[in-house]
Image (cartoon, rainbow, N blue to C red):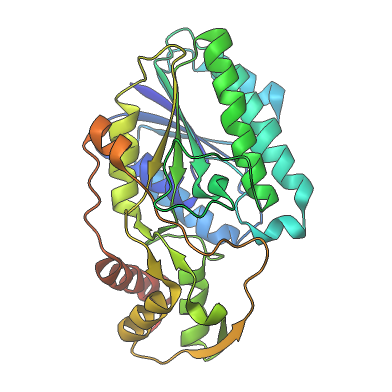
Length: 324
């Protein structure tokens, strides 16, 4: 089958695209390759995807309505859409808030409009975020929890995209699944994420900043587990009326950031230079995913604890950056 996949040069998008290609699907990738982080990493991911004859790439911005509509019309045989493109990062919204509204709301709308015109569409799967749980304190976070207290603009745009999708499912019977990702990490990851930026700082003997002494807790989820969950959900379109659902996808384990740093130190064989700072208002104290719903639907069962995933990331990090 043909799958249209936005954010193909991104971290999760690259891994999902590669897994789909390995299982024999045709993947039409879309990405603007913006400069939010080092474009060379995005190009390296695309080069690896380009080794597959069934991969087609279009360098497009999802906010370019005419171009996206034209591409979807040309790929009218597509049966699935995986929409992962977005402006990522919580704190970057303090620098460039407009990019979040453009990509995560206006861009999401463009994908919805283009997808609803696909004559053979069976399922649209899109990326949401654990950040939508905002100021919630009841743990673990469940899909039935209230999500009307976002504490960052990024979270607000992700929740807005969920509501837009729900309306399209209602109005146009558009079959959709929104996945709320919990702190994804692993090889080929995003350099702005804590585990990656900490690794670079440690090998360069630069200090790292730990909020509240590293006592913040996150549900760290390894990329291979994420990809398995994405593909299993993609193969199971919702059968509800309206056909829209929201699912957590996480490791179902909350661990301190201090544990992450310790594992990086062990894997790199180096000590971190640590400085502490107060928790920013855009950062929650803890994330922890309830995964009962996705487990019941798709048999999702994350198999990679942080103690196994971090060494795998470090092995890739050493090779990619030439770190001895």
